[in-house]
Structure formats: structure tokens, C-alpha cells
Image (cartoon, rainbow, N blue to C red; front, side, top):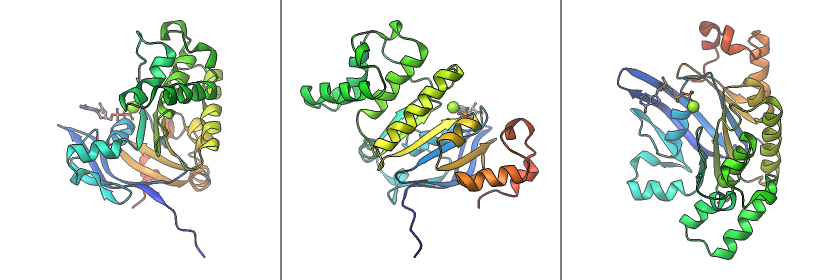
Length: 260
Ligand SMILES: Nc1ncnc2c1ncn2[C@@H]1O[C@H](COP(=O)(O)OP(=O)(O)O)[C@@H](O)[C@H]1O
Ligand SMILES: [Mg+2]
């Protein structure tokens, strides 16, 4: 018997224009529950714009986003707000609050949701330990390295224990060793949370393949490849697109693999 894939998010024919600029064009894909989906593509290919639609932070020019079968753009603002509680988003430039300690930064989403103080402290310490920063709770962001700040932001994204965690370029701008540490950390966190769905955005194909169960490749706003990691990898290798697809990409070759 064929296992049915559980699709927690389904994107249909999604197009977003900003005036003359088409940021994403007719994108179709889904997010499989409990898996890591990576969205990979060069800078400006529409990755951030795409994920902002998943939480209803941007409204599409046309097309739909379904969360657990619900067409989110048919909801009113308060209903979208309720759905958003099932997500956490680590923004690409997701800065920490400089005036707050590490502990206060990580606690922030729980404080907003008025969790009891004891629960907040327990959860915050649990996730700070998880990212290896338990002893840094009382420090301020300015006293941390770039990699440590990213780990604090990661803990802040995890602390609400949402169904879907979206990490927009969690390693961009970090050195290779720090990048590897953060990738390993993400894979490890995912192992501990088998039911959580992760969407990880990166412009680095190596990083995308390292972490993904499923991969979506965006190029100039179009989704040119989407599928399980091994299949996407095979297709790229067969066509000698391998990993430097973005530099050498011949759009007419890749177009053949466009997911309809
Ligand atoms: N708020 C906006 N207003 C106008 N253009 C935008 C806006 N946000 C994104 N864009 C444009 O949409 C395209 C895709 O952007 P983005 O999703 O941020 O790319 P990526 O995250 O892949 O680097 C870019 O051309 C960008 O300039
Ligand atoms: Mg981006």
C-alpha cells in the first residue's frame, strides 16, 4: 500500500508582483509534515517572498496557500493571526533585541503569549541548552559572536514549539565552520522533534542538500525543481547541473523539469 504524504502546507499557482517586478511566478509545491523542506535559489530568486506568503505576511497577486486544507487568504486578519501561532519564523535579518539579555530575547515570544513565568524560564533554559548557550543566558547580544547570536535566534524560533518552523537563511554570512555547526544543530533539533515541519531557506545548494528531505529550487521567481532530495540530486547530476547550477544554469534545460 502506498503511504499517503501528509501535506501540511500546499501552495497553488502562487504569483506575487511588486509593481513591474514579478517576485514569484506561478509557484506550486507543498510542505510535507514532519520533514525538512529546503528552498534553495540565488539571491533575489523570491525565497523570502515565497515564505512570507506561507504565514500570510504578504498577500499574493494570484494563487492560494492552504494550511491543513484551509485557504488562508480567504480568512480575515484575526483568523490568519490564529493560524500564524502554529508557525515560527526566523527572518533573514532577524535581529535580536540589543537591550534584552539572551534569556529575555528567547523568552520574548512566550512573554507575548502570556505563558506562566516558571514555564517560560524552564523552556528558555531547555532551548538555550539545546543550542549550547545555557551559560550565556545573562549576556547581551553585543557580547556574543555572530554564530552565537544566530543560535539565540534559533532558540527563539524553537521556544514556542510550533508545528512549522521557517528559517530564512540561518547560516548566511557565517564562516564555514560556524555554518556547519549550525546545520548540525538544526539537524539535531529536528531529530528531537520528529513531528515538526521545517522549512529552511538557503542560497547554498550544498547546505540545502545536507539538511533536506525535500528540495524546492527557485530560479528567477520560478520553481524549477521540486521533490525528494535523492530525486532532485539525480536529476541535477544527470544533467550535469550538479551543485553549481546557479552559476551555470541553462534555464531552458532546467525548464524541462519544471513541476507542473
Ligand atoms: N516589498 C518589496 N517591494 C518590492 N520588491 C520586492 C519586495 N520584496 C521583495 N521584492 C523583490 O522581489 C524579488 C525577490 O526577493 P526575495 O524574495 O527577497 O529574494 P530572495 O529571498 O530569494 O533573495 C527581488 O527582486 C526583490 O527585489
Ligand atoms: Mg531572502
